[in-house]
Amino acid sequence: MPLYIVRNDITQMKVDAIVNAANRSLLGGGGVDGSIHLAAGPALLAECKTLGGCQTGSAKITGAGNLPCKYVIHAVGPRWAGGGFGERELLISCYRTALELAKENQCETVAFPLISSGAYHYPKDQALRIAVDTISEFLLENEMTVYLVIYVKKSYQIDGKLFADLAKYIDDNYIDEQVVQYPKFIQRREAFIEGEQPCDFSVYEASEAFERFTPPVPEAATYPMARSLDDALNQMDESFSEMLLRKIDECGMTDAECYKKANIDRKLFSKIRSDKMYKPSKPTAIAFAISLELSLDETREMLMKAGFALSRSNKFDIIIQYFIENKNYNVFEINEALFAFDQNLLGA
Image 1 (tube, rainbow, N blue to C red):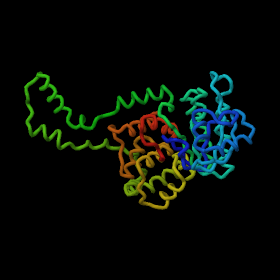
Image 2: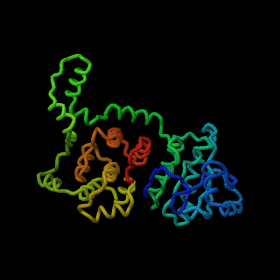
Image 3: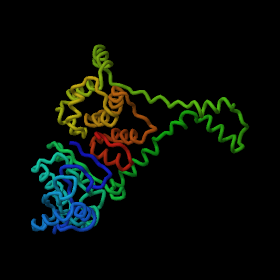
Image 4: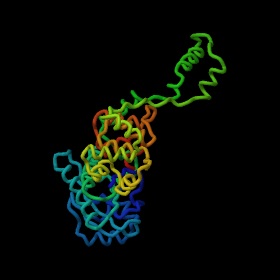
C-alpha cells in the first residue's frame, strides 16, 4: 500500500520493478516498450530473446539492464477490437499476472504504465478504470506500493460523464474569496464605471476593500449530538489520533482495513496510532474520513481536529465534497478525479 498516480517517465522510476507494455514477441516495439528497451540497453533484449515470447494477458520478468530498477515485468495487453473479444478479461489478467510476479520476486515498489491505452487503442477511460480497480483489489490483500505512471496528461482520461458532472459541480459551488468579501463594493464600483450611478464610495472605503482583505471564516460544522455530557466533554478534548481510533472501533473495522481503504501506508498509520498529538496533512485526514465513510459534518469535525477546514474557494475541497455528498467513498476513484483536475491525491 498505497496506489499513487504520478506524472513521470517510467524509465526514471527508482522502484523494485517497472512494468513494460510489451508485445507478444517481447523483442521491443514503439511507445513505452521502445523507450524501456532503449533506456535498458542491449542486455534487456538479449534476455528477452531467451523467453520465447509471451501470451496476451500474461507477463514475464527479466533483469533491468541499465534501468534504475531491479526488474522489468513484460506484460502483454490486448488490442482493442470493440470490446467483444474478451479484451477486458485479458487486460485484468495482464495486471494481476504482473502483480503476482512482483510479489513472487519480493518487490515492494512497482510502477505501471496504462497498459494497452496507446498503440493498442484500448479506450483510455476504460483502461484507467481496469488498472485502478485491479491494482486496488490486489493491494487490499497485499503490502506493496504501486505507482501508475502517466507520461503525458492527454493519455489520461476519466469517465466522461463523471468529468462533466464534476466540472459542473465545481462551477456551481466554487466561490472566489475576494468576490465574497466585498460584493457590494464591486457592484457599486462597476455601476460607477459604467455610468449607471454616481460615485458614492470613499477613497478610504476602496482601500479598505482592496488592501485590508481578510479571507472569510469557513462555514461552521455541525456535529452529531453526544450520548451524554461526559461524552461531549471528552470529544471536545480529543486529538485527531484519538478521534480516528475511536471511529475505527465504532465502525467495527480493523486497523489494516482502515489504512488500506484510506490509501495510507502502514508505517504512517503506526506513527498516528503511537502519537496522540500527531498532526496529519489535510489529504491524509480526508483519506481517513473517506475510509470511515463519514458524513460531511463528521468529515469537517475530523478535519478540525487536525487544524483544517473545507472551503468553497478550493477545488480540492469541492471535489471531496462532491464524492461525500454522492456517498462514493472509493478513495481510488476519488484520486482519479483529483488527478484529472490537477489536485493533490488522498493518501499521497
